[in-house]
Length: 261
Image (tube, rainbow, N blue to C red; front, side, top):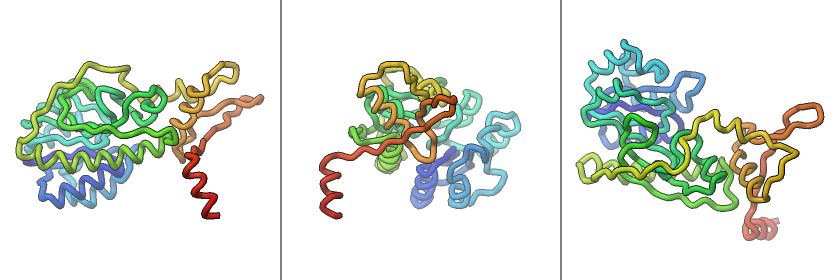
């Protein structure tokens, strides 16, 4: 099976390493442009493909890119933490379809930043391996797993949990998928909206004249705590943004720290 690999982030790099160790054949690679890439250099060096096999994700649907990709004759598209929508003209180039690894427990939190919305909306968190269809994160499910969200989790700690769960799920599912031992199942109807990156701007400013419940405010602050990203803020008397990050400690963890002092 010749894979066209579309990847970004730490998970994209680590799974590139793992797949190469399994002897997977890579037909080509798509990477985020410089302004959006994470671990692109590491992914490219790991796969060591020729320049004509490497594509800029921002131009993946250009006629020239589609022609180049067609000539490489990939069997399967594999998207790992890839931040671009795949259109039908691209999907048609994969005889065995295309699969996406998404860090949410679908159908909850389709789209961007599921680590944030699981905390704010109180929805189940998890990771899902699914086929890609015409819509965002709606295709048949290959495998998925829940991830526990603790009251001490922030957007950052939950994201790290989802990264590890993503790699674990993929490494368990891929050998079975590769031999046709997994029958995908239709995804349930959507639960809540499909999120966009821009949706965060609508929640980040704390209105100092609005009443929040304790749960609402704490969940907002912890969901948006993810250094070095600025996160939630309020405005001072001069209109300047004052950003807030929180630290949350379980009383048992706090007691342990005291004993070490």
